[in-house]
Amino acid sequence: MGSGRSGSALDIRGILFDKDGTLVDFDRTWVPAYHKALDHMCEGQADPSLKTRCLMASGYDAENNRTVPNSPLAVEGSDDVAAIWLKVSDQAVTKSAVSTLVAIMEEEAADFPAPLFDVAALFSRLSDRKLSVGIATMDAEWVARRSMKQFGADSFIQFYAGYDSGYGRKPGPGMVSAYCEQTGFKPSQIMVVGDNLHDLHMAASAQAGLAIGVCSGVADKEDLADTADHVFDDATGIEGLLDQLTKGATEQS
Image (cartoon, rainbow, N blue to C red; front, top):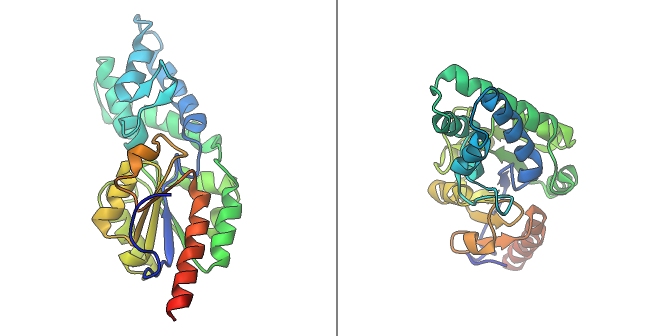
């Protein structure tokens, strides 16, 4: 599936995965976290529709019970989402108020992450291929670390970047650049795998070797196809592509 560059000339050494929607089931993990934080924020508020209005303003389609692709819920940090809710509720967007909501969301998501597949098994197979694995998420770095530990996948991961890690935010190139600096790989040796356009635009801005879109998150194939080099149903689809890259490299040698 997908469009893109010829694989045979590529030398992929590292794979940088987005987390939510790529490794973690976005709605099963985050919708309960959003509700818990909003219940706290809306406690004592007179408007019974406030919670729904906050969700809609940040990108939740209540009618179809899904997150809108490329909305703040889908691509921004929890602090940005919290700020939107506070504005909708006419509350002051203070550092303390944002931090309180973020802490509630992150604790819930970190304690109850729902995997999309056997993440540890995939990472183990990638390790067998001598590939480096990294995580680049718009969630907090500590949440990503705890989630991967709960999945039993943490021992396979060489790099973590969250919105709070100091490498900048998607779609900027900072997370990819930091991964390259830590591993010694060139950007052209990195495959970026993600479920939304921010991930793919990050790959492009960093001049990564491949930008892979997956339909396991908030976007579908049509949303990703024009930007991704390849689009798969989920992240396990990269294994077939890696087989093609290996075959192409063998034939050229």
